[in-house]
Amino acid sequence: MESAFSVSARLLHYKRREVQEEMCLHAQEREVAMRYGEHGFGSRPDMLAYPADVFEAVKAGATSFHCSEERWSDALVLEPGMKPEQLSALRVGWDLVLDVDCKVWEHAKLVASLLVQALRQRGVRAVSCKFSGNKGFHIGVPFEAFPAEVDRKPVSALFPEGVHWIARYLAYLIDQKEKGRPLSAALVALGLPRLAEQLGVREEELTAMMCAGCGNAQPATEEKFSFLCTSPLCRDFNLQKAGGEKEFLCGSCGKIRERFSSMRSSEKCPQCGAVEFEERLNIALVLNLDVQLISARHLYRMPYSMHEKSGLVSLPIDPERIMAFEREEARPESVEVVDGLRFLDRSRAVQGEAKELLTEARDHWASLGLRVEEKKSEYRDIEVPQEALPEAAFPPCMLLGKQGLRDGRKRFMFAALNFLQSAGWSPEQIEQWLKEWNARNPEQLSETLVQGQLRYHKKRALPPNCDNKHYYVEIGICKPDELCAKIRNPVSYIKRKARYSSSQ
Image (cartoon, rainbow, N blue to C red; front, side, top):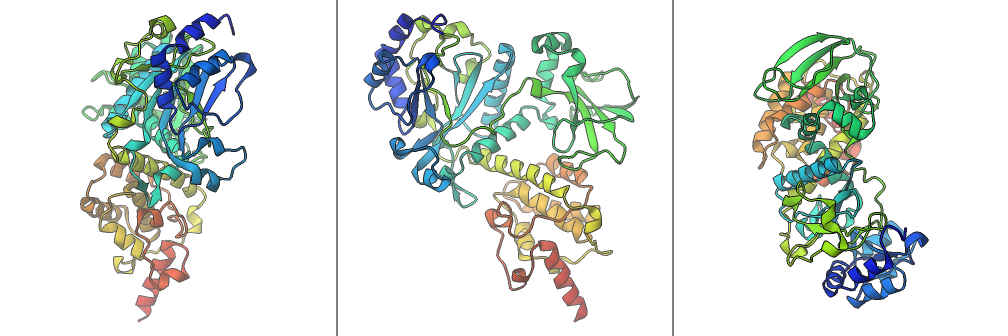
């Protein structure tokens, strides 16, 4: 490890006053941990109270500095094995830090650039970036950009789940079908032979069968294929026989083309129960935003810390320069501390600018969870009325939700779809009801999203039970009446009330 970067290089870098000041500023409210080369991390928790603390630690053998995504009222009282409620009492906030680590440097720049674009398209301006110090980037949004509360919960308590929601949502956005799958299109533009060589796989391994409902890779046996252009202005469609030659570009408009497969009825996604699959580029070979391992007291490399393997500096960079940035710029002797260019700059954030991002990410996560729940409820277990039950018998949650929602729109739509299906409503009636509801929302869901859910909700399933905290209560539509106390699911409510009304 000493051969990667010398002791003298470390001393010269960490001795710089401007480097010490920037690291100390970044360490405010954070737990800090120092790594001592091959000996691993020092004792935790630790902190940087003064700029001079940086150089003192280096003289004692520290090679790199790491800090927590969470902000603490007093980091020094943290202990191993603390209960979640104890950690929540100490946590005053958390920053969003996305670790973009790809096998190929060119791919890392592409993914990081697309993530920045996706964040800005969701109204987040306080986006910052730094070179990780080795093969990737860290994309950050400071806690000050988030609202104080969401779903009547303090956002400071939403760690690590808030990070999980946003990372999964952003991974979806940067390769969204409705947008022509930007990441896939950019990778295909590199050329499949070159892409396979970069990733160290055979060309045929670049694609995988993906569930059209949840996006998980699935083994499948094709019966027939159809090619559908993802461009909304083209939508060129033609049938191909099974085993036909793989195509990726639309011959009509030049956009990326996907291969959809019709499956036998016995074949379905074990994750969500959908029966439609599509063969497409397996971006999991490139994109790695798996944050499921993030838990309390998770650490990332601090800005201006050096990296033991590369000998480079984890350098803050302008997000607009990601595609032009080269690793050589992070050599210690080349590093300059640019005034006003900081990773997770709190002063540039406007509180609430990331509210849309957080709520949409939460709804996206909830929709994936609902699809998992749907497969547990088989059609035969649901007694569907032969005639549609009247809206006058709807439970309070559905009536309140139809008045329009500011938050939780996607979650409500999924619950309402299952509710209406279970209440005997026809697809045409459901579509009309959802159109009326969406028109009342202060900010309407896109027509593409609504139609997509209508298309994929072929299988009947009960809506979430009344005690599912992620739905009616958090959305703010749980206003129970006397009958609500006697039922566990909104469908039970409408059946009871309709039965009572018909007997009068």
